[in-house]
Image (cartoon, rainbow, N blue to C red; front, side, top):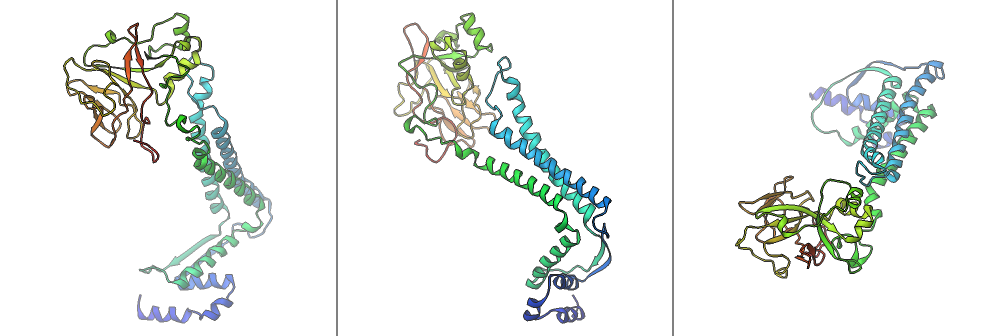
Length: 384
């Protein structure tokens, strides 16, 4: 900026007393002068207030905000009340479950889209048709410029007539209010359920592998058929040692004989996030390092580890038989099956929990107890 420009700007600067006495309109005018703004054209969209054309335009803009409010309401209701728990394709309620994510996504997206479209439409339809030329200057704005800018923005809002457009204000407030409520519910939704309710029996400490009512917990396979079909045809789902070849792996789930009378319980054990377990049979003679306190958790060459990665909960579904490594395909964490599934590569920092197993008198694998540590990713209150 030249010395001439600096002199001109200094002559425009009022004193503190003069600044306090200025009206918002005078502050807005001063802001334009300080910013070297020359308004070439400034024509109001509707010079005569209250015309039919203005009312039609106002209703058209308000429709976007009302659509946003409606979509936000759908999002809020779906998030709170729509059935989200998994239902298999052959189960009643599968259609409602399969629509949960699309409804949540579409309604949330439509809320933002309609809200943005309404704001754009309001600016295009009601802001004055203005052409202004401004000289650019380097460096940050001073306190006076920032103060006058607020007045300039307020003046621009007044020029659009927002103060007398109650329909737009109410519809925008409705959309913003419901959307804000929805965002708040999503942010606080995870805090409503208390994961520690139940103390030592809380959901984070106990899995469906825990014995209950003295009933034996078997290791079962998923045959890919419905629980109703398993029960109707009395299909054997329990796993025996001879079912696995050396250097092989099978995913198993908890099973109780009482489940043969309750298809929902049988299905629930397959869908619970903390139940999948890798049953691994090592080659005979493989040297294994046992974890302290877990020396009797295995049965011969058979070892059972949680399939839930201790990094971010992905399924550690790959087993490399040559190196005895368990791999998580999500973030490439690797665990050594011959050393209590401790992590040896990748972001995971804790070993996979080991399930204590043995074989009963009939030759079926059973779990002798639940995991002795929490399954899945880390959290502050973990004891391991």
